[in-house]
Length: 502
Length: 130
Image (cartoon, rainbow over all chains, first blue to last red; front, top):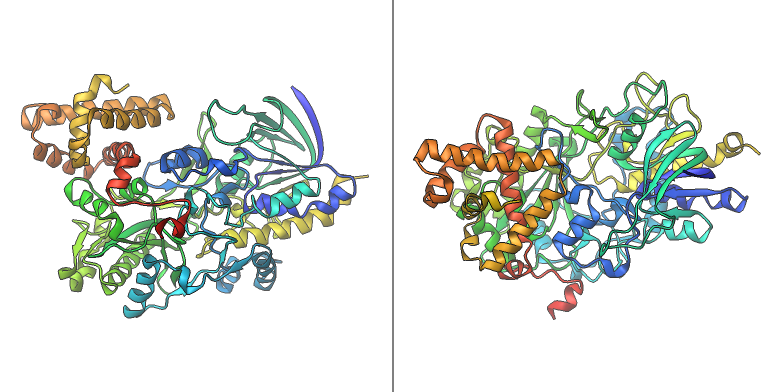
């Protein structure tokens, strides 16, 4: 096995790892060696074909089919240079003050998160799309929500040169999203930070990592690995984990480190979601234009958020309940479908956690609490009102039985949509906002890290991703991940002389 | 992989996605290729479970209707699957969901089917519509 030595190694290159990487310039300028280890490949511009099957297989863990251990929820997260910033829609919201306050993490205050978030909004070109760039899927949402008495808001987006392909979730073919693969990682590499891809960390030890470099598969997407395929021992004076809410807890749980905080892997949350569709009598522009431009935030009042969305034919079919002619009827009407993503603002719950199976593979336990189910039901009722207020003739509501509700029944849709129809395993539930597992807090009895992402009792080991969240954020999380990672980078730079030595 | 259960698999596909009844032979091949590739990427135990589930559905059909799903009328297959998808046993429900999802993946990811249902996603976005 070959051995390599670095001063700082960052595991992961998404919103957290990419942000930390971009802050390491001063260390590199001072002669330190900094390495970013990314499990997925470095995709090339021509790789982003927009083909649903190819891109899901290339970008997402398990091809987009990573399920919780009882098989009732799909968890979506990407692997590649840029992590999940490759596949998000670029929605850039600052964490709500109420949420940061409720976390109660000593030394973490909302003003700090906000100030750092605003800096990244500027750096990543966050702005509101002009009215002419909004498609009818989004326009109908605004019209319907307003008529139904809600308050729709526009998402700030981190785009540059968006052509409206609507393919955000399959990797932007026009490289318009300003994820870490477009902004922070190239900056870091220009400043001398080394990035290796197709590099899987298979074991974390005391100031050391075992890294397996995978070869590029024949005919596969992405650039070949920067290092020769094989196993490496990478020694590091400081290690910063940014592998996401599944990857980082899994590395720590599988490590040979003794005495890690007992809460490791716990407090997993994910904003469980349904995809709802409403069928209009005429075609609308839904598969062109930015897919996620507006939202309704009912997080503090009713525990849910509604967002516009547009998914691809298979993803849409998969997420509708049932099968047969009634199901097909919706999919055949694809060009007339309006779509809404409903997200439940879940809470850290004992038992919902990331863990390792006996064979060493990572798994997630997630049970739906009555509160989450109630939030999804309320959100579905609200969305149904929005669809009909926008002119839909038929709505697919997963928690109605049968799930198809005709406009003639709009007045009794609340009665048709009931928690008793929430049958895990039958209805599709998915989540892409994976949070927690290495939560921040007071000390090792209630948390894994402090407010600067330092693992309790191990100053050389830090975490810089959404696993730091001690509870759900109740909004789209990437900007807050960047803000927290920025804090972690501050701490790493501050402590560098002490940790890295002379 | 699907060869030993092809007849049952196609009958189930027809119940889940009725439009598969119009697929030409190459369309069926494409669908089954996608399903087999997806199963091949999963652990061996899951592959075994998928095949076992198809056999289980077949046995259920024999018990309830006196013949296997390959020889069953489509409405009977649908009735059976609706019972199973709402079964009190989670393992059965998620099995039906998984099988349904695999078949939808095989069907709805085919470019010709995507065009037929009106999906027009294009990298050129708005320009492609002008």
